[in-house]
Amino acid sequence: MIYGMSKNVTLLVVSLFLTLDCFSQHVTERKNNKEMVIGINPNLETFAMVERHANKHSRFLKNRDELLKNQECTRPMVHYAYEYSKHFDNESIAKHMAALIDTIIASKVGGQDQIFYALSHAKRFPEKGNEADYTFKNSSLSSETNKYIDRQISILIEELRQYYVKNRVDSFIKKYQYFYDGAVNEVKDGVSREMLQTLESYYRKETNDEYSVYIVPTRAFTKGEWQANACKIPLKNKAFNNVQFLSSSYVDVKLNANGVYKKFGFADNEWLQDMVVHEFGHTFCDFNDKLKQSLQKTSFLYSGKWEEQMKPIGYYTWVDVLNEHIVRTGEIRIAESTKNYETAQRLRKSYIKGKKFVLIPAFEERFKEYEANKDKYKTFQDFLPEAFDVLNTLTVAQRDTLLKDTEFKGSKINFGYRQAENDIIFEFELPTKYETDAIKGVTIAGTFNDWNPRSEDYGLTLRSGRTYELKIPLTKFEKNKVYEFKFFVDEAYWQNAPEFAQNIASNGNLTLVIP
Image 1: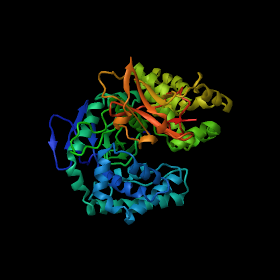
Image 2: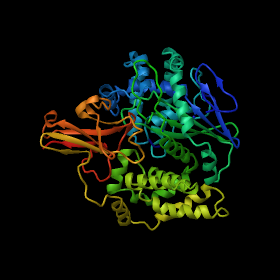
Image 3: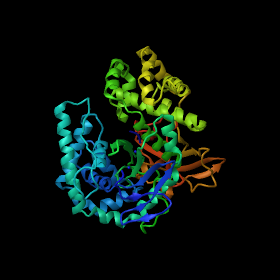
Image 4: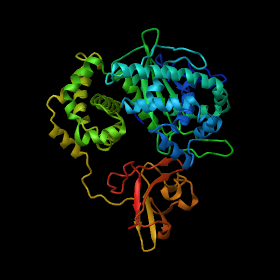
């Protein structure tokens, strides 16, 4: 899973022809007999509507509901879906979904993604039943807990199907068809057409598998939140449909009172390519039960500070952490093999230093052996058990050294502002990937302006070179109060804090305190 597709789906598909139906533009992209479908799944749109109701009743997600109330809407479909269905807030289905999500999260085996997987196996609403068999099962849970969650998911899917009919979700989808089509086109335009062949070639797995990407622009995430997931759905010909969910838009889009949009939230090609390669990469890097069991003997390595850093971002078990290492190492090696060296370096920096996947360098060396030995390793699955030989001699002390090496070595500073005699001066240097004459501006948003990135009072002015500034009187801030903020570029892109910043909150936002 990271920050997140079937044959029978109402969607956008590209081929030699274009077909339109009442749900979605339908277009299929083919190359070398390989197909990728990009579109929407009405089951997931139904889930997204009910999830918004469920947030109000969930002990884990209630905070998200509060943030959604207080933040400016930058995902129009979230707004439209809630306005369409908010009278269901206190219906029994909302409470049932909240209880089920809380159970799954508390079990530390995922969250809403488990319901997504089940819905992807179901027939498209309003039809009953499954397109493919599905049973919830997690080896870290007891048989009784697995059976309970599986039963509750089955009940919930039927409740969602009834909700789809009762709330006329099909009418909502038709009403906002233009937005879905615009979002799907952004994804289609941003994903490399050769990517599927590259993945199958690297992992040495030529199959009849299908590939699908479902976007879910109605999922109620707050600013800066998004999610991507993937699963495999068995088909009748012994192949699989490799399904990926892009569960929220990445680029902020301002809610327009006129309902007319030129951007739809997915127009960031670098992000799209990363997500698609990562999530489809998971479908090639499955761990079988035998491998999972053998990896437990080195689980002592997942402890201490490393475990404390990884668990809050969703990696609860040693097997989860190792699976993410393998997938992310694969991304880097694929970038190298296609001569995208800049991408490979960017991913190394992000994954090793930023996200603390500290074993990637060791796995890279093993992957190079895989790449050089096609006769020995006919498929990636032949190689996978041997990849973990790197763990056999690794000690906790060595692990801690690797972890320490990812820490920033220079002096950290307060970033983003400085205090003058009577003012706070916010400062921001535009990253090199942007051009000053090509962007619409730089703004700042935070707890001091209700996280409104489009407030005219918080727009920065270009002072010199690539540096933007904004003066705010000290009187606007309370002493010793912790304010959080972020910079916002080109009316679309939130900027992450640099590693040399010392004023970073646990959620990644920058902080400001007036002593």
